[in-house]
Image (cartoon, rainbow, N blue to C red; front, side, top):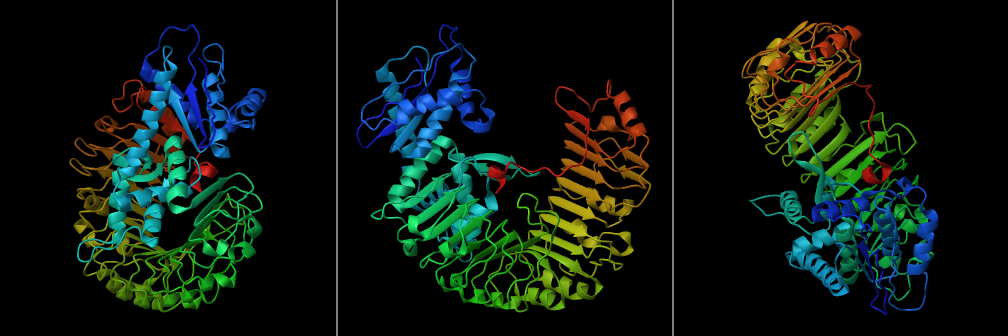
Length: 635
């Protein structure tokens, strides 16, 4: 039996069943299910030689205007691609919105139509029930995810900030911030398998999620019913003038024009991903709370945006906008301003009036090619940041004395990234940071080529909740500050150009929770030793750009949890590290820019070296390249 696509009078629905493979012997049902599900993740451009068959199936299933039940079968030998073809047609039909609902069901070789229909109904009811059984606030959060493009890897922090800005979650005074509540909601959705983790950071926390195609189709349908949310992908937008539309998302759509969307002034949220629209479209909004533009080729934002008094979220990430409206400060309800990798070099002075602002993320891209955002540079911000007492995130900002002093009022700060630090700012900076008792992420960088040193020893009260720390620039006396050993919650440390020595490495070895250590041009001695019992939690060690280093020793009992070791451009290393056999759990060894002599000797040891298990590890000499995710996934 091949895939079937029943269609019937309204409400119409499209259904596909995975094909069985003719006379092939019965296969394990789990394997069949996995193969059927995996077909959903094959990109269209990866399918070769099916265009004629695809067009024929689409014509039979979707282009017949007569409302009648239709059954279409696909026959062929096992492995020729029947499931992949059926999946592609199913997705095209589902995206066309010709049917009110669609379902994909994998069936065995032996089934009856009654069994198939029951299975379809059970699956849809189960998924719908899983959504309907969510608590109201959590259900509202999940349905809002229907704005994201298909197969997009949704970033955790961005999603949390949007939920907060839309009012789906609120602060619990004296207990936790709204961001923490939203974080808990996200964990619940993962536990219920409604959102699937796809990437994690080095200490196990999920960074990006994806929503399964079937669930996504269901929440698109439900959010349209409940919230008036419409999503258009890779098409021209047409909306009937009688349609109630409150939320609109467009994904890679051409010619998004105001005349195609009635009642633009009534929209509450608008999200655009890689679509063609101009400033005139944006100027029609009146009641908007969320304006989120990613990879939209628009160079200016209209001044009319400053009249959107309900706006809480403004995102122009990865755009070519060069400046923001001067009167942006009129947006008194704005909570999130995300201009990361835009062309904005300096924020207008009125930003200091945004007293509701919780997250300010800016970073100026260095090129107009949207797919080549780096190198990038810190963005200038105006005076008066001390007024933004609700600010929790401030990244990636060019520092000066007034900016640094204003930070003393921002006691709710959780994530701070500053560039352009010099000796004249250290005293005020240390004083300001000492007041940030909630700080979990800190990045401090000196201007490239600066002769000054970064002296943080004077910080009387370091942020003890710090989890991520990044320092760029030469450290005073070639040492880490003594208080570094008090950061017992520190998970990730990146040092660049700091030029530390073995004594600082000893301090770091005692940190109980450090899982990721990166030294980039940050160690000046010839010898590096990892002593027994040191770095008990470290899972990834990156040693890069250390030309003086000629000897590494791993003593027994050190780095007992190390999984990944990266050695790059350590040109003084010609002998393999001593004690490599003591790294009993290493899974991945990456080398780049190393001496040929070093690589050859390491390869000679591979045969009997305890750390190298060809079945579970990866040993390779690789060029250092910037890795980009697929455009549709990253956005």
